[in-house]
Length: 403
Image (tube, rainbow, N blue to C red; front, side, top):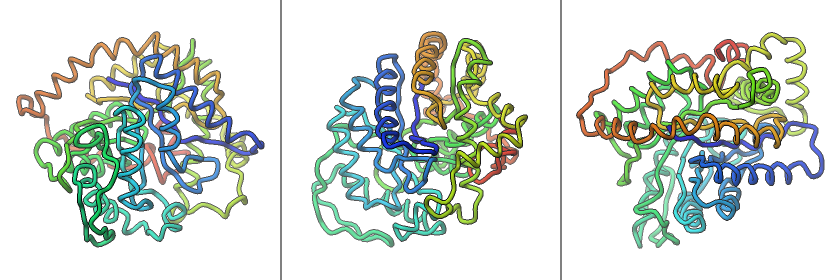
């Protein structure tokens, strides 16, 4: 397996005058460290107007800065929201980042998840999938054609040469955000890498991987003329320390991440309260005080623990044939020092074992794509319940599934 790090750029209240600057500078230092330690990816989200949960509206700026402080790590848009960006601007952003990074971009695409984000861009939850598909059809030829025009249901584009062109030919690898089983299957059918932004058990990951690869191999139907990218990545909460107890103590921000995700996603239309009227950190502290057992239980899930504990959990994910794990430990008020120490300890004690298995995994993948291995069509009905693994669920369900 390969490993990435992941940033929402969370910043719980109260906010000091220098907090956002330090948030960005610390995250950039963490990416620089991850590059030196041999991590494979750094992923950055695009979110708008989500106080405390994510202060990351322009990932291409962050990733461009990271590109000048790193040499090898792949720089992933995880994701660009296509409904809130003009297709030509998306193609320009991706190509420019590919140029300044010397061809290290991963192009993740998504729809956006709430009316809070989509509303100001005159998009609705009901149409976002159709807008996303139209945007993909409009964008992809821009990377290769010297003249391109498009007339779709949501985007109209006159004949122009979109410049510059990316380093990677025909374009950087494509990914799509996936938050439920149906989206994973869709990613495989579209021939696009799947970014699994739910927090899964190994058993669920096994079912999702089978669904993805079977759709990719047997039922692929691309939206446009682009190069397929067969990859599936899963996000996991993460904190590595010398002991399980110390890792859990250092990872309290993970519980805030769960709480704020559930708090935000559970509202009608996934709409946030009016700006400045709610402190998620205060709401979280009140919830934690009222639910101490649930708060403690939440820290037993994910990849939180000693190197040995994390190693055992990863061996189960290895069996599921996930291509990469995306590690999330910039969450809540987790400290910069603890994040860096976690990255260093994991890279020293855990990562080498799984990096050594990459050639074996790539050979398995080659055989699947060539039809030499046929994966079972698993019954995935037991894994379609979203409770416990992602957006739009209550915190009690999230923590009950954490183990």
